[in-house]
Length: 279
Image 1 (cartoon, one colour):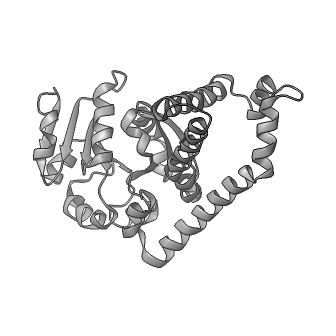
Image 2: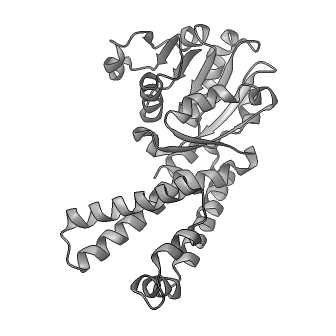
Image 3: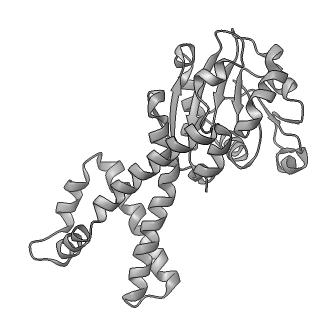
């Protein structure tokens, strides 16, 4: 495949690193397009990589175009590359928050394959949970998108109407889990550990819990039973947390975040949405 990434900021940069670092992605060329190409000097010595500030050049020399620009830049950029897009050849993958497939279709020639992607900041360490959706033609090319984003974590194909919810669970969700890890570390400090040790214990334990579920493909309750004994310390701690509303507060937080992202989308438009979801 021939890949172009238009807009190589933090997210586009991470995607480029993922493509270059994954041997299973059999790409023939990778075009990286950005206004200020000086920030892309680290890619100059990679074979098959071309750095350019000409978006049309990048599109002409690709069959997969990844749009990683700010929402407000989308229409102007698509206008400049409109004539270079070939519906019979190109697949457009958007990682732009808050821009629907329908909105993107309006700025492109008819019958172009479009895939919408929602990764999270863990993409920088190849551990993103990336949700994908597509228009009818894009569905036929979804394996290409999965090949790219699976090297940067995991992917899940969802209906587009769930993308706002996916933003809350996966993108904002990074912050929610970080807050839980911080709380665990604070508790460890109160129990006598130094701060650096407390954080290490909390991070590895959280990672271990997630890994247990991913490996077993089981339900959290099944793992609860393995660590809780009658009258033991674990069940005492869990019951106290639930008495203080831990699960209820977490779920209410998710719902509040979901309501807020929909409110912002309606009130301010999608140009402000990326900065809000990443804050």
